[in-house]
Amino acid sequence: GESVGLHLPTLSVQEGDNSIINCAYSNSASDYFIWYKQESGKGPQFIIDIRSNMDKRQGQRVTVLLNKTVKHLSLQIAATQPGDSAVYFCAENIGRGYNKLIFGAGTRLAVHP
Amino acid sequence: DTGVSQNPRHKITKRGQNVTFRCDPISEHNRLYWYRQTLGQGPEFLTYFQNEAQLEKSRLLSDRFSAERPKGSFSTLEIQRTEQGDSAMYLCASSQNPGGYEQYFGPGTRLTVT
Image 1 (spheres, chains in turn red, blue):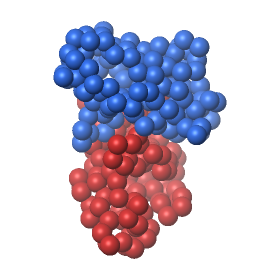
Image 2 (tube, chains in turn brown, green):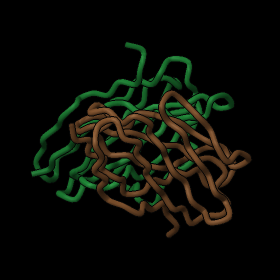
Image 3 (cartoon, each protein chain N blue to C red):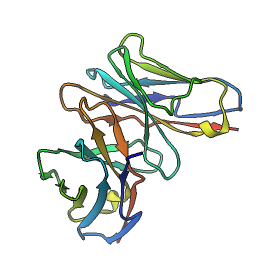
């Protein structure tokens, strides 16, 4: 079946550096994408979303970029902090109605002092 | 705390037993979703409700699984005759549709079937 995938399972960065987490999606009909952060033992935490009619959206220290031509999504975290260490998932909504999300396996971000 | 809550947080049961989990969504949200997550994987969609109506069920939701949202507020997920393969984190999320659409997740219920 179609699913969201991630290029890198683990990303290690130094505190203060910028982080970029990548995601490839396979369904061209997907019209809505979300990035989630999940810490150990907790549920996924909403970070930022983007609709398919946009190619960039910024939040607080985070930016999501969407490239529909190559079906690629990325999450940029500025000035990465130890508290950013977690597993990050991208998820896509397929079809109309925003009724379910398809998640990838996740990327673990490890921030070193 | 006005977020999504789930109970219990952990459940250990023996194979063959029935278990029931509860989810209380964010109060103004009309949509409620159930997902299952196994170690190292992303959440997998199981089912969702618009108010009290169950509108979609995944093929993952076998006939041993049943979910209800009788009054359009809290929801329960029941697993009958549990199997070891049912061991996972069961996550609940809620959203407002139309509205923000983003789904907010609860802390999950971790089920261990021995």
